[in-house]
Figure 1 (cartoon, helix red, strand yellow):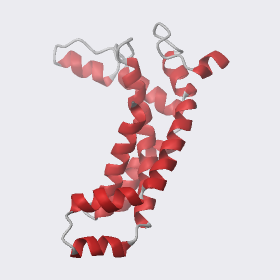
Figure 2: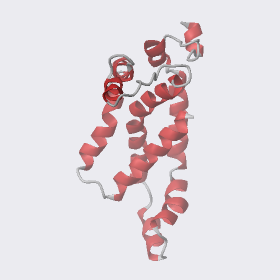
Figure 3: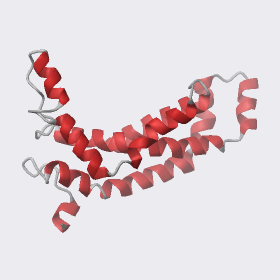
Figure 4: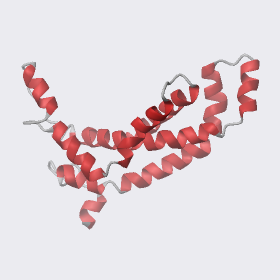
Length: 174
């Protein structure tokens, strides 16, 4: 469930970046790509601190409002918490893949659609997305392979727990 959400968000960011409405495009690209450059173990430790039920900033904020701190690593929330970390780490990478694909779109087709009166949504739906099918296929393949390599993140964060809810094939191989 995490891969389609991440790829959709990355495509949206790439379309915003390509549209020209973003100021400081280099900083925008860097800001979203930078988590990819962080080693996954380091990123997992940082998110583990943020998720900490006794000491993390989210727990401190909840305590300040008189609420009980959420346990992001409980049976019911742990997979969503891990998906959040992976989404944070790899969205920028996928955004750059899509952005590179957008740079190779045939501009004459886009100009022709504008002259024919096609709106932004129709242009994206009927020209941009179909033109990006090879890039989308590549991104799906790379992310499925990446999903099979996610052992380090899961093991550092949960060691396969709670109640073996995050064990993956690589856990058994380890």
